[in-house]
Amino acid sequence: MIGIEHAVIPADIDESQFDGERPVEHVERLAREKGATIALRFPDSLVISADTIVVENGDVLGKPGDAAEARSMLRRLAGRTHRVYTAVATTLAGRTLSAVEEVSVTFLPLSDHTIASYVATGEPMDKAGSYGIQGYGATLVERIDGDFFAVMGLPLARLVRMLGEIGVGYEFGVNRKQRAESREQ
Image 1 (cartoon, rainbow, N blue to C red):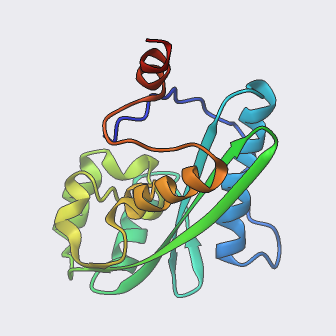
Image 2 (tube, rainbow, N blue to C red):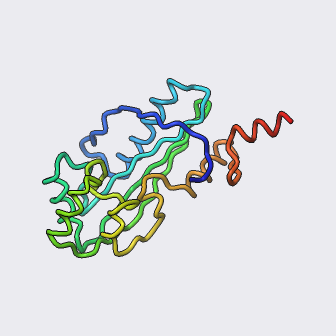
């Protein structure tokens, strides 16, 4: 969407929360571990990694194991405000920067029919908290206080600032390949 040429490479790490680990610490650790795992395979590349969790009343709501769990999570979120934490990490030449964005999301009250209909779309099954704000799940949300893109899973404004801090400039609509080609001319 913002013109950064990239490849998506799954990190395949254990995403279990450690005993006593606070949600903010958990999500930032996961983003950093994902980045470190990929950076080992591609040491000369810029690695951008992220992780998102949904927290309601202190409990981390991960991806649902089945439709019944998705319905249960959505009932829990209905008509209430919860927090979404998205951590992003950038790794380049052995240096890693990371940060966490916190967003407050308020759901509309939801009927059992609405919840069942949404779950039947299949969209909630691979999403933290059982909803995707970038799809049908947007219709469940009454209000967002914070970065919409963090709820989607990648806080873009924060990412661009971090790229500058790690030494990678960002130019609107110009990817790294285009910059290299223009320098060669």
